[in-house]
Amino acid sequence: MMAIRLGGPVFLKSQDPAELAAEHKRLGYRAAYCPRPALAENVGDDTLRAVAAAFAKEDIVIAEVGAWCNPMHPDPATRAKNLKFIISRLDLAERLGALCAVDYAGSFSPQHPAGPHPKDLSQEAFDLAVENTRKIIDAVKPKRAKFCLEMMPWSWPDSPDTYLAIIKAVDRPAFAVHFDPTNLINCWRHYYDTAAVINECIRKLGPMMVSAHAKDVTMALDGASLINLRETRPGTGRLDYRALLKGLASLPHEVPLMMEHLKTAEEYAAAAHHIRSVAKDCGVSL
Image 1 (cartoon, helix red, strand yellow):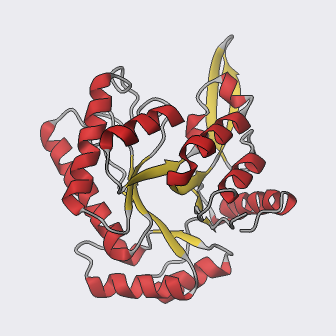
Image 2 (cartoon, helix red, strand yellow; image 1 turned 30 degrees about the horizontal axis):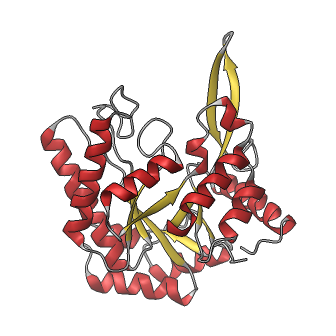
């Protein structure tokens, strides 16, 4: 089995690459989100080299550069501005040596970059996701970094099969898979068998995965009969972390597992403790 590189945000208020890398190591992380100094406007190559060197010295992989905006925005000017931003983030990932840049496929909703909207699972949305992904990759022509789409419960790609369909349609070697299993737990059938969802994704998409997100999910009833699925901290929901960790560790390459969306250092420490406990129990090295 391969090791998994666990990572997450750090709360150290510093712009010094060496200090930030040391803080990741102190927390036991072996992967990082794009460090703050690299996200500065018009960041220069000297800064990027310093960041890359500091994190490499501590054996910490920079897993992903977030490009979170809406490339399907219904306003053409906003859509063009967002595409330009995403292209700049893939270029940053390439220059920094990050594994990937990642964004949503987008939404026709003007309010939220990832929807939902009635047209977000239409053929029109699928075709636009393919067109935008090609534009982004072709503008940068990356040799190292990959571009990925975040799996979402109500927009493309919303399953391993739709991810495979987009990969085939995009037809670019720089397009890869970002794995967020919690986002695929979008109905009660999936909720009660999260291992089946995880195992199907590993089987169909595993060789193309470059980064993954660590979250959890709970389900309750709103009123008499409406299902309410909520994201929660790893270890406080139903996501089968044993299946997730064993699945990622079974791949022939290291896939960073990045915790996200928590508010405090204490919450991240609790999430990391849970993930490490499950990893130890099932013989997976982090």
